[in-house]
Length: 301
Image 1 (cartoon, one colour):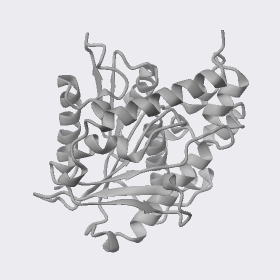
Image 2 (cartoon, rainbow, N blue to C red):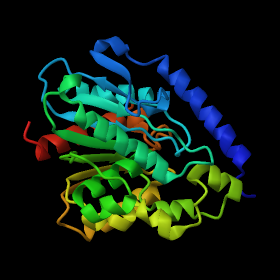
Image 3 (spheres, rainbow, N blue to C red):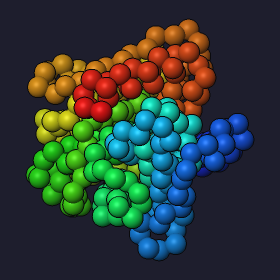
């Protein structure tokens, strides 16, 4: 039986409720100075907003910009606040970007365009937001990992940038951190185990236009990347094969400074983006500590 649009709507509703429940156990947002709900599109849409958190001690004047996941159809910038504290505690400022998810009428180009607009708005207002440096790290999980890697590739290549249809003004991250990312988007969107309605709901009206999807698939542009890249996955990650495809391509491209962490665990909680959603797991601490060491290695901070 193929997955239907109704099934995906039920999954979306369940995940939204689960994230709302998770938030009740979050550390206090007041632990760090912050600016919430900064609208980058000037339209009042809450999904066109970003949140800024400021490190308190040993501030490194490097900003970690995060793009949340959510299967392209759900997720919220505030869901990743606990993950942000991993960096805030080490002196990195943290910005969590939101975007309008797909509902069947939007596509990957719209989600990516939201992210580019958020980045351009942020870089144009650094001083006004009290961010004293234009040094950035880019991170993303799951669908957000897809968007983060594509953005990094576009920052490295004018051809990729122009191919997406969105020009990036003055942003180039010094490192990219991906957790359980979507990599070959054209392959993911082209799966035949869902109905047309379900695929449209997830990927947009052009889910069968493979030439179009390739423009927004990180897999198609990996040769353009010239930024240090960290990738994590685990044996219980339901899209682990995506990370393994990326690992295979990185092994063929030793000119890209990269680190790949494929965590093996018998704990079923150690699954997709566990280090973002459940920081108390010992395995999550292993992944997040590895990311911090990667930044120490590749950034002069």
